[in-house]
Length: 287
Ligand code: PAF
Image 1 (spheres, rainbow, N blue to C red):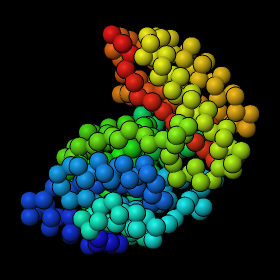
Image 2: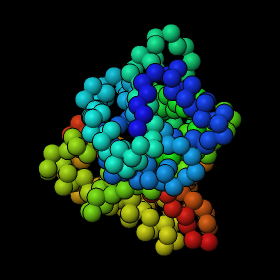
Image 3: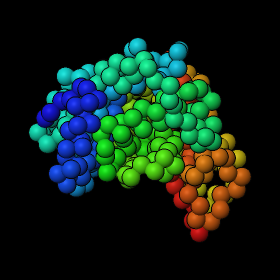
């Protein structure tokens, strides 16, 4: 498995493979790899092309009071896990921050509207940081296909919009969320939870499962679905709910009434102590 840590070497390697007629498949990550990431890598390996996994904890998507400093970093373990799943077939791009942000940059990628709700108000600047680093990764790694988790559904829709608007010639594939047996979505941040918080955290997935059940059974009123999600979240005394919403999957705006056959996103975010958990379900109403 080749590990590349400079932008220049990664871009040269990617362009050389493309010139030789190879397709490239990118899995962008921030490391601390878990089974959710493994599912992304497995999906990427099913695609035709050479696999590139990027590992970069992107400082520009963390707010000043967020967990950039303590975000789990486990490069050795990550490389071991990738070696097991992808053997020698992958390239890992793991640049230091100075490679991605040399300090001379003045350009940011802002995707309007899709970042205004859900996580947007609670994480000012987050999606600008994500869109910017991912646009850079697209230009550096030159992928034909990008595989991303639907656990971060808002991020997925923001990046899909960016790719269309900026004419990146690539497909973004979403992979369903991998969950613990009790439903909790796998996340690198689950490691921060105390045992008591971990027990209470199950309400987050329960809330979105309840939303999915109601939507798929034909409930058309988001207000009632949100109320049901809120009452499940309220069962966790230690949780501070940030939002429970039902939005459309184009611009991620609230839906007044769910139309027949309409695809919607039910999403929640809650704090357990200092740990912020999100979960969501993309589902379609019956006709
Ligand atoms: O989902 C993530 O791990 C990150 O937000 C991403 C897409 C790698 C950008 O830093």
